Image 1: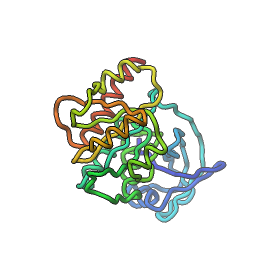
Image 2 (image 1 turned 60 degrees about the horizontal axis):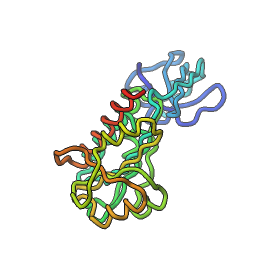
Image 3 (image 1 turned 90 degrees about the horizontal axis):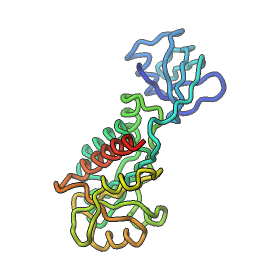
Image 4 (image 1 turned 180 degrees about the vertical axis):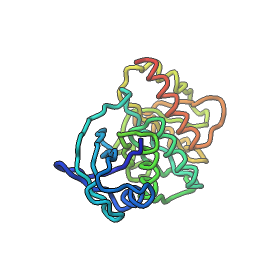
Length: 238
């Protein structure tokens, strides 16, 4: 199935964005009267019939619409520091969406080497991954914030880091013991890791220290591992 994305659909008709229209009309050679599969990113699977095969604004009428529930019961939110090499961060975004994630927040910490991120580019990666994996629920990509700002908006969860200042629980064990939890929030730091002060600050905000295993993982690898192990363990417990 080829899946297209339309953010705003009202009534019995809709249209694709210019980039989606170009792909449908110029790349895939879609014509008037042909059926296409569309999602609004909110769990709806829509069958549309093209009414104007324009590469600038491809319009369609809606022939059917189905609300498809998520295939998992948990909600996963990963706050992960942008990597120095942005390609690695985009790789994390792609794989996290394919495996299953609900929210992503880029966080800037004391040791962050990258201090800027382009949200439009990241959202394009997320959308492409969602379409490729036929994911009808597109994750929320939050605005990049400082760690202090994140703590002002979020409390409770887990923080993964390499230091051994405090005793840590295995992230997998935490998931097993809390198999009925509905929301999982995990903080993952930059290449230089969180500072001891940041770890202490996280503890004060209710974030439990966790380990992702004995190997020292790259930032983006840690994010993908967290998505994978969460998906597997939560699936086994359901």
